Amino acid sequence: MGAVHAMVSAGTIKLAALILVFLATPVAPNSEGDALYTLRRSLSDPDNVLQSWDPTLVNPCTWFHITCNQDNRVTRVDLGNSNLSGHLVPELGKLEHLQYLELYKNNFQGSIPAELGNLESLISLDLYNNNISGTIPPSLGKLKSLVFLRLNDNKLSGQLPRELVGISSLKVVDVSNNDLCGTIPTSGPFEHIPLNNFENNPRLEGPELQGLVAYGTNC
Image 1 (cartoon, rainbow, N blue to C red):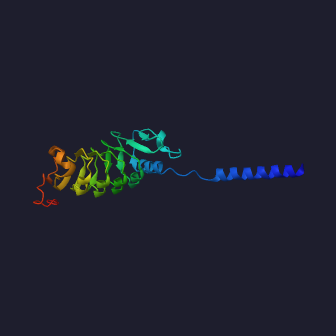
Image 2 (image 1 turned 60 degrees about the vertical axis):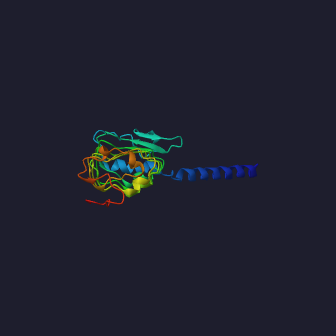
Image 3 (image 1 turned 120 degrees about the horizontal axis):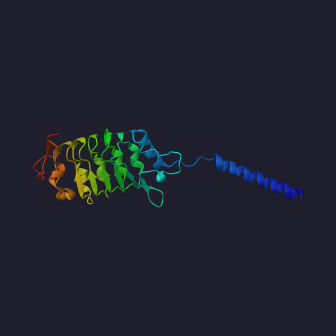
């Protein structure tokens, strides 16, 4: 009887030890939630649109303005017309399953992070009607699922990256009302983009004549 009691006691101690180890093991951080919370910290949010973005939750799928798939991976960020100001953050490039990044009609400033080129599932990138400056990153040419690229009504400068010509899925490109320079591409998806989607860029010339005009003209 004593031996049985000793075995039970030993088993109980081992079980208790396992429970303690389990409780002491930190929950693996959610990289997507961390990336989005980094964005929140970089923004001014006078209307408390991001109030539900609680970094202590297991994942961000319960946050307002966030949509996830059945695997709890973020597929949409919908923050258009939300009176937000601040900067886009490189960490957005960690949202590997993101399909829609809707940040239009806010007051975002600074540049477009090159890391957005890592969003291989991205279908729509809508940054129009902000105060974004700098150049359009050539890394966006890696977005082979991209259909909508709307960057109009910002303060973007530099050339239209020729890497965008290789995105066969691209249907809509609008970069009007910026300060872009060089020439307008005419190959690949740009063959079907109307010229008024490039208007009000005083230093942008086009459509380019293949082989006759250097595309860096006026830059």
